[in-house]
Image (tube, rainbow, N blue to C red):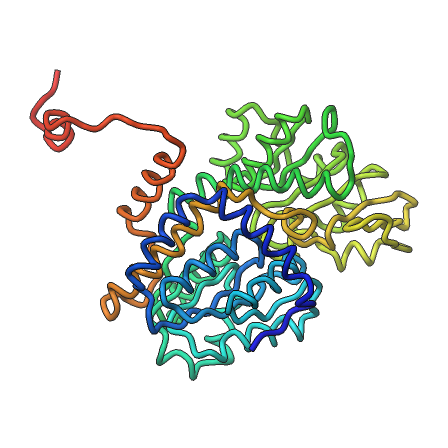
Length: 416
């Protein structure tokens, strides 16, 4: 029971999944334990994630742990069709193909939910929102869920505040071994990768504007600077703006940055961060991309409204000719450029993110009936264990506190 683009692509997908497995030692370590103990036996897990080779390693790990798994894509352009086909051959129920329209996107979500899950794994919140808005009959069998990314965590915290959340959610995104690494190093590298694959432009010497200075945005800013760009940060949060200044970046409003930027990337989680007015003031030849989860950060309806024509000139590049005669280049239809135009985060960093997913699924079952209906952080012991396993896989050792040091850290009596 699956629907993918073409099962003939499965062989290519299998090779890519093997590559990812070779570069995800922590998750493979967890898989070995799952194979023996089957901690997820009898459980159905519905997942709405980017269908990539790294996600495939997680899906196979959950299956080896005894779970029945369904998977749909969490973005219309992030599904890798060869990976989807390969997962079907592995016995995973997959409903995903690149380029789905809105109707098919939600059909895929509904199809994944038709397996009547006990645990949900979401990336962006669309799966959980669908359950709450349209599939409330499923709630009685759901123990808890997980959320992979900042956008979804924001949505679920808003639901919790409004008393709309109907089951516990554990925020994978808030694990230190996720956001300090995946968001920063993963997004930073993969966003630059998506821009380069789309355009092949020289980054050195260009004014590179990053909207936001959260963990994803600061990773992008760091990598752009490393490639020789003059990086400009725009922010609405005074603390983050101050931090960007202290990190050596220029900080200014988007209204000013739009006049001098060559490449623009949004990574804020909010809408209309780059508006039609901003685009109107950009120089001809400016490149615009988004690395946030949803395609709302660049106001594309306003871009259409100020344009007299548009055409596709490269894969994932549309040339807009504005009414003022300037040409603007939009990458990946304004969707997350690192997945729509590249392969997403490197396997090595997703190793930690998806290790969190696997271990939290196990944690949910161990604590069945004990979790309140709210958004939780990942337990510290899981976070620390993943960091330990990652260091071990890298053959790196660290010091250990002595008994005297532990005593000192828990005492208030010793002073000057």
